[in-house]
Amino acid sequence: MEPISLLEYNNRIKGLLYDPTVQSCWVTAETSDLRVSRGHCYLELLQKNDAGVTIARLGAVIWASTFAQLNYHFQQVTGKSLASNMKVMVKLSANFHEQYGLKAIINDINAEFTLGDMERIRREIIAKLTAEGIIDMNRQLDWGPAPQRIAVISARGAAGYGDFLNQLHNNDHGLKFYTCLFEAVMQGANCVPSVIAALDRIAAVEDMFDCVVIIRGGGSTSDLNSFDNYDLGANIAQFPLPIITGIGHDRDVTIPDMVSKLHVKTPTAAASFLVQCGKAQLDRLSQLTEAIAVISREAIAHSREQLAYYGNFIPLTAQKLVETSRLKLKNLAQALPLVLNSRLDNERVGLHHKREAMKQAVTSRIDREKLRLEALGDKLTLLSPQNTLNRGYSLTTVNGHVITSATAVAPGDRIVTALKDGSITSTVN
Image (cartoon, rainbow, N blue to C red; front, side, top):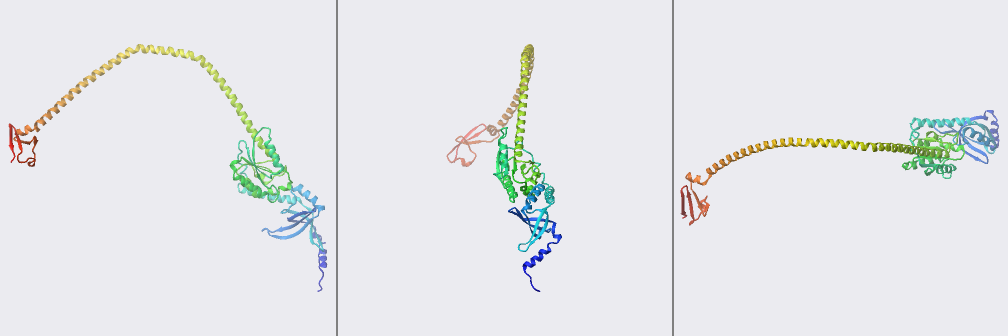
């Protein structure tokens, strides 16, 4: 078989593409590697299986003459610009060029299809947060009486951040607020990790703040894509401080808006809310001050009335007390002699009884002591040396000391032996 040239082979392929089943056909796919150059939009269309593996791939282009109109309509319907990682339904026609190969041309986009898929993703995130029981955690936190220490998550140069500070610090009521910026990227692929990192930094010093404000001013609606993220929603829902979100436009509600304590439309609305909280507290303090003043005035007036009443009542009361006391003194003066005589009679009787009792006690004690002395005398008489001598015993002494042992004397000593009727002097040999 004779070979043919590559050009001939490409022409044969080109001829096959005139089949109406591949021209002007609606196709569902996922966008990837989207880029815009010189007004033309280049991208790849992918199909993935349930495991996320790409099973089909086709390069595509939207020519500049069509892209501006299609993208504008897409934004009006979905609120977002056409971007990578979107589920789309596009109307394709196949174009094969002998030199540049096969290219799919996108002639139309069904924006309602993408809107439905975006809503599906959002509902899946909300359902997951609800199933985990965390969707209402931040909304259930209590505000302080007047939040004044504000942690702000925003891009430093954002117009919305400047509007927020101006509205907050230049309020008409002279309220003082203390703000600290935790800078973050508020759009694009780095938005979610940047905002979560800022939340982590605030959580490390949460005692220094009353609440958190996440604001994003200006920018296109398509920049809100990244905020519909489960990880960001879960972090905000479980954050320990109340969070105010002001990151969208009037018609846009993102996942953070749905789980935060308070959702407002703009950064200035967030500042206005904080100012109103402070104003409400000021009004309450003013009401309490007025109430205290009224109560104080009423208490002073009542006290003055009481003082006037007591001022008139005291002289009469004092006079009555004096008269009553005089009468009591008179009665006591009259009763005193009788009382004294009665008391003296009682004391005399008592003294007489005591005197008689003392006499009896002394006599009884004397009798007992006499008996004891007599017994002691009998005992002394019984135990006296003379009584011993009278019983036939003798008592020998040397130099006035009683001899109780033969070793107490020596030859030549003079000893005296006492008997009942005299004594005998002897010399020891």
